[in-house]
Amino acid sequence: MTMKEEPILEPILRYFRLSKVLRHIPHNVVVLDIGCGTKATFLRHISPRIRQGIGVDFKVDPFESGNITVSPLHFSGQLPFSDATFDVVTMLAVLEHIEHESAMVTEVYRVLVPGGKLVLTVPSVWAQPVLEFLAYRLKIVSEDEIRDHKRYYNRQKLYQILIKKGGFSDFNHQYFQLRMNNFCTVNKQ
Image: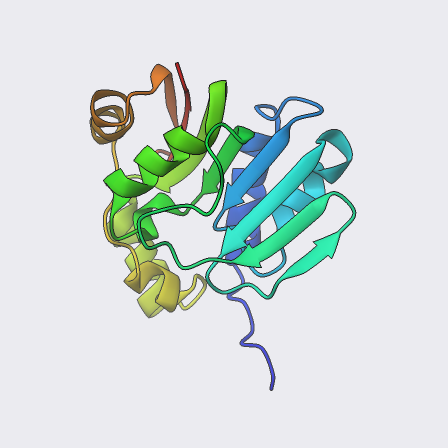
């Protein structure tokens, strides 16, 4: 069976997300990457600087490589990890695909150690028409991925879900890629 070829713009967008996030990953930490993708690209990239990396994604085949472990996961309201397991949780272009975002945020909070950090990127509200044009007309981003977006975000919406509802603190937000994406970090109290 042949894999579907990745649209041309996808690796470029992924590179910009990864470079934005990299400086927020401390050395010698345990990282959970939710929605790690079939190749666990981000975890493989940060592997030399972290103690351990766990990746989960519904479309991944399980594998282990050095300090990286990847497992399939269909989120059904609970993450299969003990409380206070991870120093950092990353969700890079993932939360917009999750049906029950509040349940996911609650679970991320639970599995983070006290003082742990959530690092995420999500598309902004201004990105929707642009992404739909790039996917449906130009075919240079994945139609399936764009069709699967449940929502788009702005600063206020992220603050509401992460701080007001999620219980996180230290809200740090900025737009990037010409305001098409949100970058956000929050900490577990």
